[in-house]
Image 1 (cartoon, rainbow, N blue to C red):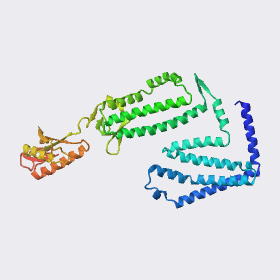
Image 2: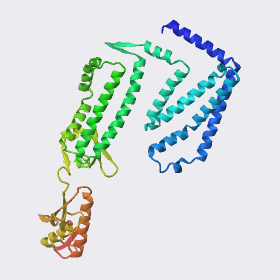
Image 3: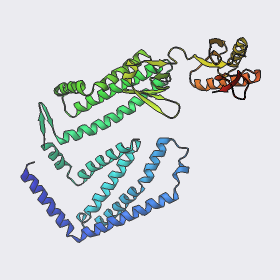
Image 4: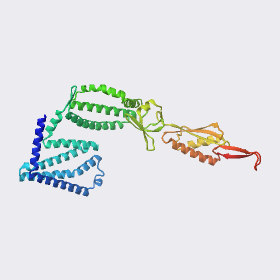
Length: 436
């Protein structure tokens, strides 16, 4: 389509619009359209006031509830389309069909929007629903008014040639629409496969995550290749971008690639897996998810640490549950020199053995570690079956030690200083104990 053809099309369209606007039938149709809109609004309000969806669909499945919400929300569109159809049929039987052309267009647009909303109700993403609905309705509107062919020709007339690839706006739109549909279907398929793999008890968590990620990447690659072939793009023409992609990876994407490769290594060697309790630097918690770029570590206090995969490969990682979840708990304490160290060790062992989470098959142990300036120092060790909540177990044992020592008359040491005052009112060489 050249410039002259475009000018002629615009002039003819302007003449048609001018003739339509000057006709009294145009204003009659406009009034009927506004009346139909009022009827649709009143119908929607009446349905919403008389229908309680919360109580009606409470026990229904979630997809059915969502569909019912869409149906109820589309009542106004259905009422408007019905009123336009009735008005169109009435005018066709009363006068010339050309005098109700706007009513036919309004009815067709309303019906198209109603069908599109019902079809897209199966999509869960609100943004995708709006994008697909508006795009489909725009195509339907152009087809209804008879302008779809000229618009397609106009979009295909402008092009940029890159080697053997002829890039046009029409090609870009087709590619975008098909990519959205293909990736949406890929997401559904990958979630289905992920559910089947997750329910498999024969696979470890690391292997499950690795399989899910490999299948997701493979499906996405296959979908993109199919879409490009469907729109007529030869995949060999993309080779011209490989050099630029290599330069981009070398200069700006090396961290992303390193984290991606590190994630695959972590999943393959199973050094960490979802559910492990780890300490990485100053961050401690349980691994809740392993992603392509990072792992998520839940600290237990509402925080989640997002740690890049590369850090787990290059830095020191303490995995409390790598081969065995049994964890040795160590409690350091002290007593004064008036206590019997053998009795102290016996009491400490009894307290640790009585702890709720202590493993009964591994007896506790208590040793005297030092004769310090303030008193004797001891180290009590015992085993628990899971490192989760280890600080709570230590606190419980230390409180029990405190109660036991008070009952037995054993004192916990504190620093003591002796001061000798020479002269004054006190007798010579009288010691005074001062606690600090």
